[in-house]
Length: 81
View 1 (spheres, rainbow, N blue to C red):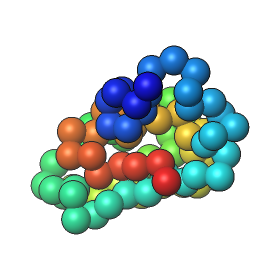
View 2: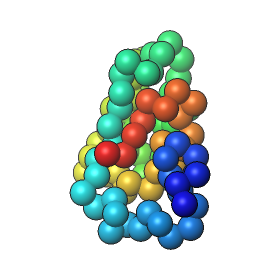
View 3: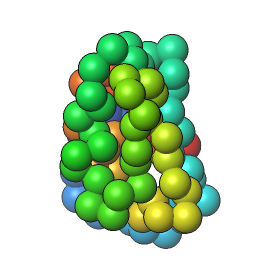
């Protein structure tokens, strides 16, 4: 399929099996770092945190790779790779 939002496809094409070897990465050059990160609020497990207006940090032990933050980031600064 491949026409989903920010590289996520619709349907069952991306299973949890596909994501097990991936990590959530913050691309700091895409992050404006001048406002509260909106993606921090949508993380269901609190894996994203932000100090001041800096780029968000990822707690890889907490991250469940659900992709909600990736879909929510308006700058596409969060990616699962």
